[in-house]
Image (cartoon, rainbow, N blue to C red):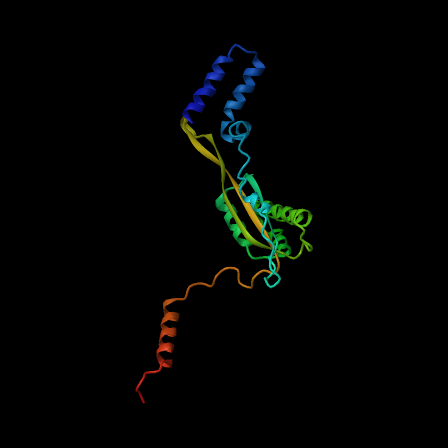
Amino acid sequence: MATYLANTLRRLLLTQHANTGGTALRLITAANLHTGSPLAKNWNGHNTGPQRWLQYNKVIYPPQQPDEAPRPGYVCHQKTNIKYSPKKMWYVASFVRGMTVDEAVKQLSFIDKKGATYVKEAILEAVELAVKRHNVEYRTNLWVAESFCSKGRVFKGMRRHARGRTGEVEYKHCHYFVRLEEGTPPAHYYPAAPKTGEQQLAEWEEAMRRRKVTGSL
C-alpha cells in the first residue's frame, strides 16, 4: 500500500506542469482511491480464474459392461471473479445442494441476496451446457450434486477517516463452482446429526437388555 501511494503521488508531481483539465482529472482520481473501481482493472487483469474444475468435463471413461449400472452423466460449470464476499456466498451455495435444478431455480428466485442471482445464472448456464454439449436428454432430470465457492481476487484500497487519517479497505471477489448430475437426488443429501449422549445411553441400555447371557436362567 505504501509503494502504491508513493507511485501515485510521484505521478501527480510529474504532471504538475500539465494543463489544468488533466491535473484536475488526476486529482479527482487520487481523491477517489477508496472506491477501488477505476484502478482495479489494471492490477490483475491477466488472472482469469481457476480452470481445473472445467477439465472434469473432458474426462473420457471406458465402456461399461452390460451388467453394470449405467453411469449418470454430469456437467461442471463455474463463475469466476464475482464481486461478492466468499463468506456470504457460502450460505447460498450450501442452500441449493441436493436440490433438483427446477427446485433450486425456484428457491433462488425468492432469496433476497446478491449471491443468489449469480448462483441462479450459473445453474441455468450449466443446464444449457449439459443439454447442448453433453447429450443430456431431459433438462429437468438434473440435480445439484456439488455446489461450493472459493476465495477470488482481493483488491486493496484506501479509505479516508477523520483528522487526516487513512485506513485500508479490501474489495473481495469469489469463485462459484457447481456440478449437475443426471438422475434423481437422494432423499437425504446431508448426513444425519450425531446422536446425543442421552440417545447413545438409551441404545446401550436396550442392547444390554436384549443380550443373551450364557448359562443364565
